[in-house]
Image (cartoon, rainbow, N blue to C red):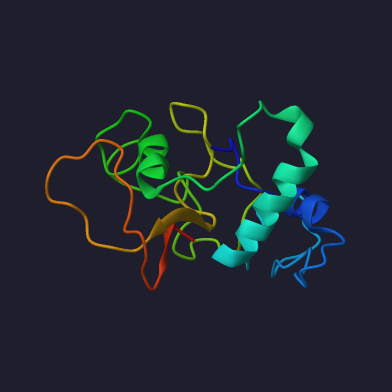
Length: 160
């Protein structure tokens, strides 16, 4: 998991000069280097991850790779050991997160306090893709579940 959402600067550095026909600066509020990148599809993210793994291969341990987390991994990280609705408690306000158009546009990554494990913007700012296909939750307790093997829609978490 990344400590912050991927910034426009980080996205552009990886995607500049790609031969896949993808825009290296796809954000609506472009030219804001420390705002999160947005306006990218799940498939676009796969190209980004492939390019990131190629360019950063000497900096990550052998056998490791940058990938999207499963929905369960994202949820576990977001909650950071809590059982409340949000990592900070049961209610939300504009002092906790950028959500539901309370500001009307993205904010710089890390503008709000991190959760107990040091991850920023797990609630609000932009929606975040996860690896799983959308599907029903198992009603039984499951440790580190994975989504269905196929489907019509990929899962987005967080909130925008």
